[in-house]
Image 1 (cartoon, one colour):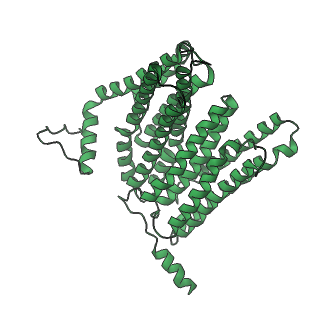
Image 2: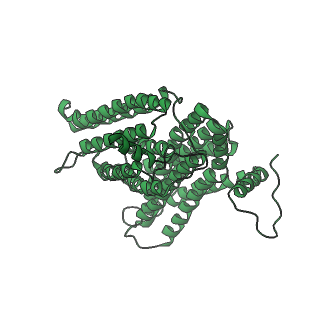
Image 3: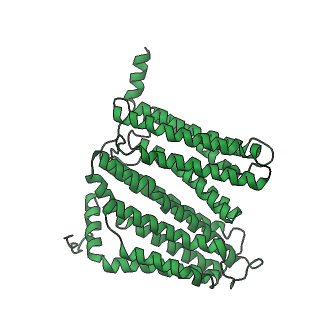
Length: 434
């Protein structure tokens, strides 16, 4: 009877095949991460110091690792069929508690449960559930099961360090400052063990069954991060009266966000999907791991830093009490604004180099220009610094369209033809890609 029940549960699972796309449940699953990213931005905004930014990025890296685990699972079996569906619901509930606990991930608030311990316990629960259901889904695939056993070692090592960060510092340190330093250092070690460990076990054994699902899944998380930058624009002017500076700043922020969207989705995402589609076996898994699991993190982190910068700029231009319209955006607020785009472009350059084997010169030049312009922006009013950043980002897009116009149109036309979007009646055919 037990064997019969196991067989029935197994039969309700549906494996992913080439051409499979993202399921509705995965989109629902991502809603928890929308809230979690908002919490990360708030965490950094409430402690706008070097330590605060580091802690925010550490939390983001941990959230990213959780999300990536289930992206790999969802590329193996459909997320909305069989027992996987129930596991994802349980993970969503647990991840929501993780998101709620983000403000207490490092500093426990008086009363209630220990925030750092709850955070670590929920994180471990999410990771263990992933390994259990992934192991179950990988029945019959000895290579994948061996890889999961290897992956369990760095996961458990990281979890032990995370629990140590929650429990040990206050027992061995004499001052709150020492507690903070030890706890942050243990977090760094925990993530290093997990990230380096997964890279060290290699790509052989991992599986990417659908290139379309894989690229779409990661494209959607980029959109979610960009959505957080839009949310930050609105949060930055909450309870402030509408004014022309707020309208102008909002428009400039939208222009920057649109340029970052364009940089990813206009050409690069399409070309990268085709590279992944042509690859097979361990080579495909290695591309997926390097280009997406690892090199998408700096892109997402850059967008979250940019969101923090937006939030600070809108507070400057809309607040007539603490700040004047002519006040420059000094310090970490400015670094988050410009550094977010710089980090995003660095991620893009690495992504393209690993996936396509080439370097985009306009983006490399744009990155250098932004580095040079940081001291200039430091002398400008906050709105002027935002406008300068918008001009550079939009200018990059315009230059790329002018330089690569014919090849871009050919690639996009081919992509649209493949996805059932034909030319408009009476339009001339696009040039062929030579």
